[in-house]
Image (cartoon, rainbow, N blue to C red; front, top):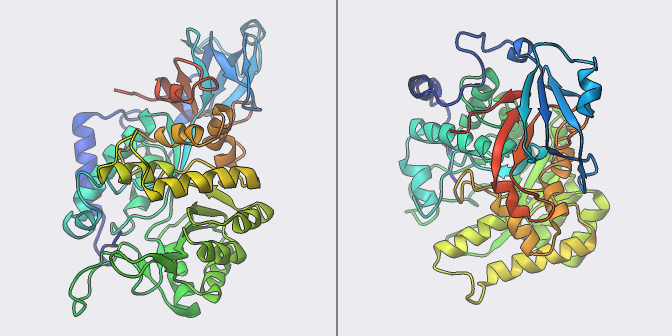
Length: 449
């Protein structure tokens, strides 16, 4: 994962992608000519959803015989249709009506580990994406990936590093907010932080400086400065690499010292931002938890003792099972064959995390595999030991809690109207999350085709 050189302007890329989107009409969610900075929801008539099964706020059962009234981007009433139609709050003659025909209404799904600026490694190796693909091309790919993500029912993503594409995630986030492009709500982590000489691409003549997939920072002062630079560039989260391999083929080892991680979290906290840590070694995880990070990404090498510490400190795990599965397949492994050690380790860690009571949220590392296939993470969570109820919660209520957004991840009055209608019951079979009939984003119907 490498980063573009500072100072490369994003505006040419944005201009081109906006031109393409306007030309091909890819599902804008605001009327043509609307002020991109204005709240376009205020002119939308209320939307009444009827005839479906509504997920209870507890997330473990369905409420039948309920209609859901949406207005100005929020859920304003959940009640029998007759009660709403008799003059309930928010009801008007201009209400639009959507028959769900027995569909299953759930909150918009959340993926806490996304890379919109990457595409599958079996298409183009990561190193080639970082070093050979232009920023403009990668940004345009990001637009397409954002649309696929939204159409799959994922209305919010945390994008954990642009992997050499500078601050393009901030541009994508803002373009979605303005209604210029369709896509999920994006929480941007910009370039991510790595210790010097501990991130790829690897394998080049050491005489030459090679662009990196993240921002290098060393020492307490260097780490603080890097955090400040990312905050100033528009980061919503700070991501640090608590461990990584230091050369091609080497095992991962801790990279940042405890003092450096403490400084990163302290500086981010001073700016009001939470911190996520890539960590796959037991010591890297231990240091990150001690520093006060909000989430651990991957976590494959976590010992039972470290997992208990995570549970005690309320640190959430994003296991990225789908990325490990994808990489194993790219290497030639097929289901039914003996699992490679990385998958065995991930399965064991996941089971241990469940037993230790660690909160687990949905984070897939999508970008390693195809955007729009985010549901693969939830399927693997169930395969590895969760119930469908737990897996759906990981992508709704628990993920929303990580983002400190109690208005997301739940179908209840007052919540933001990010909603998905499925053809069948995901509490019985989690693969039902792939059967998307409709997506509603802040009260607006999303064009899926």
